[in-house]
Image (cartoon, rainbow, N blue to C red; front, side, top):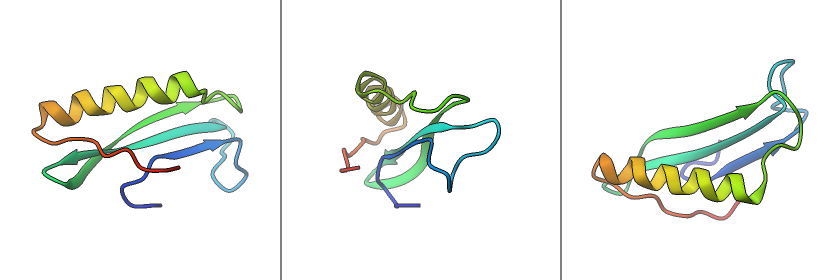
Length: 76
């Protein structure tokens, strides 16, 4: 996994299971260190849209702010 970077998998054979076909993983930051992740999974392929990605990044920023950290936007 790419440490500290946003990961988007839309029907990637290497990461797909019978139950999960799309996923979005966003790091949660606290004082410049990744302390957790926000993960969103879908059972259908190609469900990660740009609007969903923006919403998830915003949610991760709110979570990171509440834990005293911040979210860095990493290139995908």
